[in-house]
Image 1 (tube, rainbow, N blue to C red):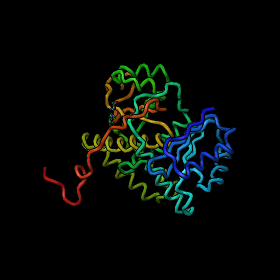
Image 2: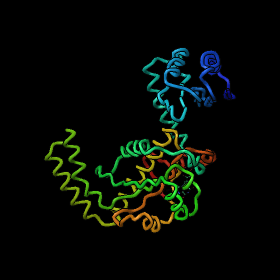
Image 3: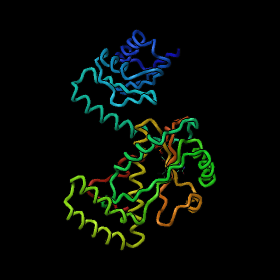
Image 4: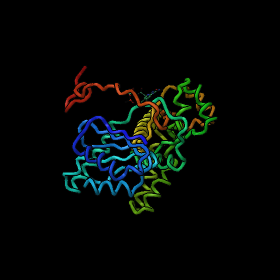
Length: 305
Ligand SMILES: Cc1cc2nc3c(=O)[nH]c(=O)nc-3n(C[C@H](O)[C@H](O)[C@H](O)COP(=O)(O)O)c2cc1C
């Protein structure tokens, strides 16, 4: 049995690890406790573990049950701060915290465990969640080609200038933009009527207006819309993936013409980016920095230079 406890001891952490040693040792194959710097969050990577044990542990520690429990990835997050806070305050804070963690933890990962396959079911769920992203007139111009077989990933490798992540990742998702997304306007607004969100007459006029407008836009404007919506969906996809314990890297480094030719994609579509997704072998560069916010954000007045 391996039993590792993170380096930074904290009263609550001591309590958790003690409790775990005492009550749960039997069921633990591997335990790795890591406490974030602000000591609010303990992340546990567990070997044999199940929901009942997690609930029991939280009861013992008077700590809020984890909002994210990913048994498949053997990861749970416990909020140590929860011990002193009331329940409603707590769950709100936890949700915020988890969301911010997802954002902070996303990094472009270029080394993946080649043995990890994301099931079609889970991939579909990731894509479904990603499609909750906003889009111009809700026309959802994104289309995805998920490349997840070893043979096709090998085929993609030279197209992506031999970036190794293409074959190591569980899948590579080509995010495409549909230049004729208005063709689905009837289906989209029909759904809204069926769901009771919109009267049929309103839907009809939306459809008419959108089909007319979007089918007559200058090509460069259509492209701009499709790339904007494509960027939003790509970002959302990467954050959903991270929240499920996977990592990603967005890529522009590939031959667009060859991608289209190899996978028989028609000219109705344009490539937005390809995204490798899988289980990280090595973390992304923690050193990637960002410009100071004063350099990029301005209130009310934009600098002339
Ligand atoms: C549109 C786009 C294209 C990118 N293309 C590549 C690529 O071809 N290969 C690669 O390894 N990383 C690529 N990246 C990843 C960037 O290098 C990375 O996002 C940036 O350095 C910031 O690091 P971070 O994602 O870890 O925060 C791309 C990112 C974006 C947004």
